[in-house]
Length: 292
Image (cartoon, rainbow, N blue to C red; front, side):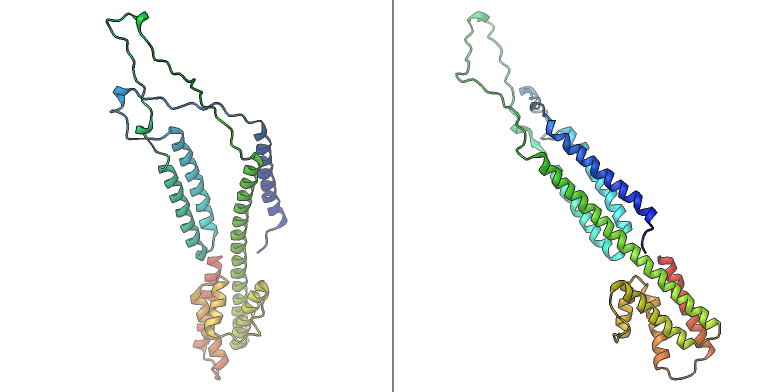
């Protein structure tokens, strides 16, 4: 099933708007200046025993929480848009991504033992302050200066753009596969409805079943660019083709039984068999309409 042109325009506008925002963000990175690094507050010697065993900068907790929340929302959307056989892959991929972020979050702990403790120097009580001898360092201590990363902002922008485009491509592929599957189910339901109408109008039920069988194969052949009608499909192969086209397995198997009965029966059908064929086609219609 293809989207109408009026429904494609908003999607394209959102895509161009997103890419434009990324370009504006990248253009501002050239004048981005980082403030000098500020060391964490040092712990006094008497407070060392009360310090926690591990320490984490508090801003990282919020950053990781936002990233994981955004990842969960995106994966939930993809999970419900994907086909049933693709949901397991998305679930495993999501769990691995969340586990990776959790391991990265845990690795941000720092040992408090690595923090340099400041020593409190107090002058002796009996010695005047002007007679104290201070041991000054012979070499000048040069403060550490933060240096900007050597990676170009355009490389970061290109990498981010590739990730965004890959995500758009993944969503588009899932949406397209879902739309094609819904189109197949609607086509199958319409073909089965036509067969029911032919049987109820008094036409030969065997011809209606054969036309229904051939029509469904023709619908699948047009979308897959393969000619299944000229192939001698076994009942199991027919069911596999229909299930791959997102038809429920039970109606596909029942339609195969009806086709085999018509093809190899060689006898006049009773009214009970005709009613059974109509009931089977109605169940197929309900299953296809419900899954679409």
